[in-house]
Every structure is written in C-alpha cells, then in structure tokens.
Length: 457
Ligand SMILES: Cc1ncc(COP(=O)(O)O)c(C=O)c1O
Picture 1 (cartoon, rainbow, N blue to C red):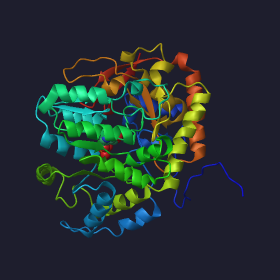
Picture 2 (picture 1 turned 180 degrees about the horizontal axis):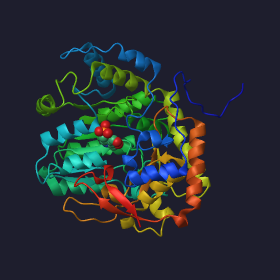
Picture 3 (picture 1 turned 90 degrees about the vertical axis):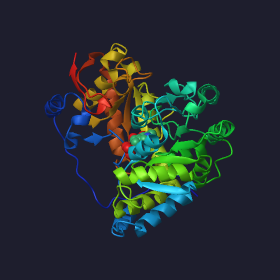
C-alpha cells in the first residue's frame, strides 16, 4: 500500500469568486488615497487578502444549506436551540449567550464585572479585548511565558501563561482581579497554542485564589489540534475531545465565531455562573438583542452551529495547520525572519528584525505592510507599535514586537495562492534596504490602527 505525504485541501470547490489583478501604479494610487493604511483600502483592489482570518472564511455547502433552515422567530427560535445545543456539547457551559461577534461578548462581560482599578490577567489580550478592559478603566495585564516574547525561539506552547507570574499577580492584586483569562490560540503572541497542562495549572491557581477562569476561545480548534500534535499523551485523542477538556477547565468563555466558528459573523459568551449570566443577559437585551438571538439572524445561528461541528474534524484541522506551516517553512528557508514555530492561523513576519534601519516609532510593520501591498497586492496587517504602542495616558513607546501578520482565511486560498505569497514576501525581503519608515498624520483616541493615516518619511 502507498502512503502519500501530500496533505491536500480536504474539499472541492463548487463556487468561485474572481480576484482582480492591478498594476503597481494603481496600487500606489489606492494606498496613497487610503493614507497608507491598508485597513482603508477597497478590498476589491487587493489580490490576496490576508488582513484577517476573522469572518473571511468560506462556508461549506452544508452551512449554506443550513442558512435556509434559519428560524427567524424573535424569541425562542429553533435555530437558537440548535446553536445552544452544539455550543453546550462542546463547552459544557450552562449559559450560552449569542452575540454578533467576539468583541460584543467581551464588552458585555467586562462592562458587567469590571470596576475602575481592576486587573485582568491574560496570556496576551487581543486589541479589542484590551480596549474593552481599558474602557472600563481597568488594567489588561499580559502574562505570557517569556518564550512568547522571543520570535525565533522554537517552543511547542509559546502561548502558555506564565504560572509563576500569574500566582504573584493573584497574590498581589487580590480582590482587584475579577477573573483570569487565557486566549487560545494566543493571537497577539503569534497564534501560538496553550497546552492542556498549562490550562490545568491556571485552573489550579484560580481554584486556590477563588477566581473564575475564562477562555478567549476564538481559535479553540486550532489550539486543540496543536495539543494533539505536540503534547505528550494527546496524539490518540480527537480534536473535539481535547477541545472539550480545554473548556471543562474553564468557567466560561468569550468566542468570536468568525474564526473557529467557520462563519462570516457571530459569537457568544458562555459561562456557568447564574448571577453573572443574568446581569450579562440584561445588558445583552439593551445593546445586542433578545437572549435567544443576541444580534444575529436565525440563519447565522445555524451557520455557526454547523461550523462548530465542521471545525473539529481532523482532515480539516490537519490541512489548516499544515497550510500555515508550509508558508512558514518556505519563508524560513529563504531567511525571512518570522515567529517560530508557525501559528495556527497566520504567519507573523518579524518586521523589526527585517528592517533594523527603521526605528519602532517609525513603524517598521507599516513599512513592510505597505511594501507587500505595493509590490504584490497582498494585504497583511501590522501588529506592533501602531496597534499597541500608545498607552491610555497618551504616551507612545515601542510595542514588545513589530510584526506583520499574514492571516490565512479558512478554506479560501489554494496552495498556489500561498506559493505566490511566499514568492512575494521573499522578493520584498530582498529589497528591504529601500524600505522607509512612516509617521502618523491622524489617529483616533482608541484602536488607532484601524483608521489612522500615515505619510512615508
Ligand atoms: C483573540 C481574539 N479575541 C477576540 C477577538 C474579537 O473578535 P471579533 O472580531 O469577532 O469581535 C479577536 C478577533 O480578531 C481575536 O483574535
């Protein structure tokens, strides 16, 4: 019997969306018009869009079919109960509260439980999570393991929480900590996974200090597959069984179904605590909608329910994790500095290492992002000093890293798209000496990276 090594896309394509080819001059005009911020481009002018893996995935035929099953009843719709049952089967949580996306779940949770001066420990807060903590005048404290700060250091679980630092924080901050969070996988830290052993360690500390433990579960399935591949003793388990154990260690979660829900919109907040759940539902009614739809259409609930079933299938996860690793391997072979090992949903280029002549406050991540678009029509995103460098008091300082994230939408691009991306990144890296920094022309007070405008120096 033959054993074939090639891992193929575990689907065939029955509907396609054409992409538009542009010339360099057209892209330069478009980027200038956009204030040199790729968030402000018309997506139509992008050839390969790696801005985000959030809400950009391709739904399956089964999900499109499920849309037609949507029950649009305002209260108690059949689609809600199907959604609730799928989420409950996966997470085991008592209260399942749909929201229109992840940040809505974050806002409702944090507005309900935070007071000024509170502290939320996390391995790394993602930008919206951090902003939703800070808007309540609380502190978002990142406690990822030291390995998580070393881009080229190979470690199987660079998303792990630093348990000693967490214990010190729990002891020092006491009642100012309302809950502990862990983000799986750790998007800000490079899409790096968290081990089951580490989650058990967080659970034990939360028990000792009587704190609830919540997961930011956006990429729970990718995390589960890394656990299966990398954690001793886990290889024989299904990704779903591993995911169920991850959730069983927590008391609740926030979830953006735009990632591992394989849906274009949706999310949820889930928890066991009856009192918190009631307070969250009251706020949900005020801003999202009735608790059985939470800002979603019945058909969205159907798509998410089906997506959560598909995302834990092993052929899907094997292809998913391998396709990111494949891009990373090609870049590493060409000497392009990236976060290693590859994350679950993205390759993170180390712009600070690639462009040592561009100081962090001249935004090397923006310089590299602009060059990838100008030269190849590829849209990535800066995760660095623009995104994280400005503090609530207005100070600006370099973020811990200046990265450019190339996030791979789920089930959208084929291997030849990824080959094109590799070729383009390697070419741009080869012309690094010609890339210059940028200065900010205008920026809003919060989440400035989305809408800031820049000017090349
Ligand atoms: C780790 C993490 N948490 C939360 C969110 C917010 O989710 P949403 O974009 O659905 O609001 C994201 C989105 O990128 C994320 O990556």
